[in-house]
Image (cartoon, rainbow, N blue to C red; front, side, top):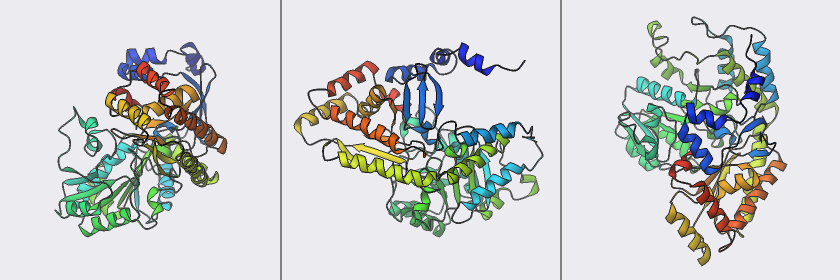
Length: 468
């Protein structure tokens, strides 16, 4: 008798956090309860979630930027259903799968410099692991450069390239010869490359931690410097790629960046089946897979799984047919313009920056005496506390899901689905304005926020739970 999934979901409704406490991750379950994110969701569509009480939520976090196509996209869902009904073979050990070949061909069309080969992965961090191996094998060099505040994943290799020490704590020693340099600093990059022992410089075209955008020309010149010094230039487009910034890749904003390896994932999954891809040059590929006895020297059991390939193909089709990149540009501009319009009234807002629908809102020390007092009090309690005074009331009072953008920075990040509407933008801006209005009254409603923070007992650990 087949599993009755509907009956299973109904019979265990509401047990989410008890089950996680008992069987999966009790610390994370406790964190979610502490910060008030312990809702039980039973329905999802597009940018919306509904809890088991019927309350509707606007998701401007988008599953850490995975859900670019929205939740349960009907066309992607139908493609999966249709494929399952075909009883098509998958994971044939000795096989050249049709669907992975088709998806690779589609991805190659979308890279400006027409990279030659594609290796599929199950995640972005696996893609970074592959890039590390490919770079070392191709160059014969030991060192990898990465940027301050970088985030490339949490497996051992990718963790070695993490720009935040708290993620690495307890897991060291990690890979040797992984060297951190300042982001957006060509002089520092050239100095590091001049040792001539660097296999690759791996960089995000827009840093996820803080939504830091490099100066115009930085990525283009970084690629040229790497080539001059015999190192590979690797672009981590795991979060920024597949339309997130209003172009297929974030490097496309500079037009003529020429990477040796590009890593994508997240949105390629359509929110259904994990998948990632590593696109690389022929020279790099042939140095790794250099003979028949090395044909699978780097591989993975599930890396060309048919469901993942179908999802990738369907996601790319939906992205193009529904003009999601164009919409990302329009909606992103509305959000940034809306927040900029608030800046004269709300001195806590320091900056808003982004491309497409990857947006960071930065807060800074206010000028007025009363707000400086509140600012100092919050930062004295905990240097990482202030962004929670925005994220938590957005959720508690307005059912808008957002996230903290990183450690030791006062930035809230927005990565909603690319198919949000003007109505969704108004929902967010109205909620954000209300939170700002309350934060800018002291003494007054700001203490309500402080009470919420006290109730939720926000610490460094809860902060980590709502950032990515």
